[in-house]
Image (spheres, one colour):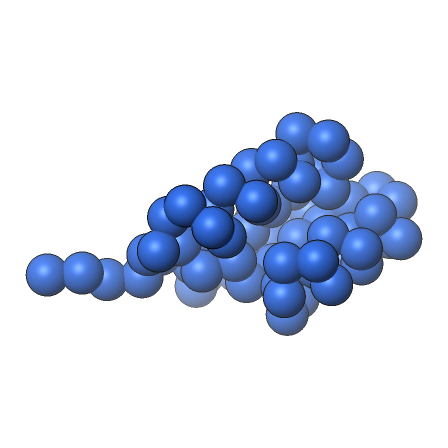
Length: 68
């Protein structure tokens, strides 16, 4: 039995991007659904690179999402 897990990344710097890469390419059950970073451009770049649909500068968007 396999089920997907929705994942949000808080922080789109070097470590956040490393986590996103591993989740996107090495963990088939992980679905990247949101990314946030205080620097919106960093979050947008990470979202574009890993096809993440939700982007925000506010980490609470991820923390308050019951689907993540």
